[in-house]
Length: 249
Image (cartoon, rainbow, N blue to C red; front, side, top):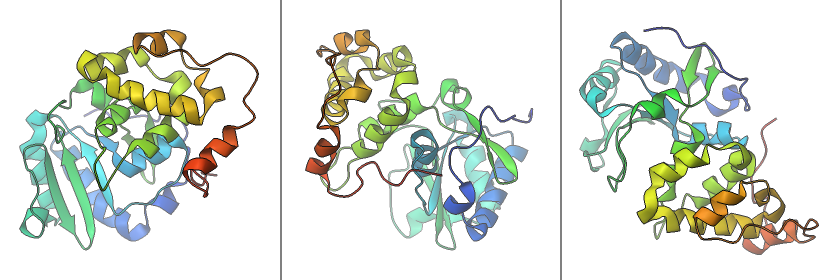
């Protein structure tokens, strides 16, 4: 396997996100996966931190893998001293494997809970590569991270605040054609709902998104007039705290 080279500087201080103790548990998993030729991209809260420049610690890591590599990846996790979390907390094994050790979790993901998507080569090759402590690791692309989190709108959990943060940081530079193709026509209204919310929350930032994206989704492009004086106030309508979270140094 050819070594990966960094494609950009890290936007967050990874030593603050992953403790030394956690890294000593994660690193053997990555080493075992590399030894077996399993390719992966880092997703979850750590990828969110990089794509949004908003630091978030987490007690697990999400590794997105090809469906064909599922068995080898599980073997790698087990060889690193982890065991199946299913024994303690049953979960749907049709799209994810969850390994646990000493209070941390490694999630291997090859599909999605609703089976709208399967991980393919673009998930593993299109994202940025950054230096994570003593190794270079590929991140899940922002487009695929948005696609995966778009459907997490549940009674007790909603990932849209994460997506609004990502849009605020990277929306102007997204590969919108790829994202729209992945979401497809049947779920385009869901993406439109996310963008409509973002346009209301951050009208000035939304103006930088391509106009054709709004039109494609049946939305009126944001007004190109003078900046709105209520941008900050709109955040406070939803949450009196720093809505977009503490920005990474």
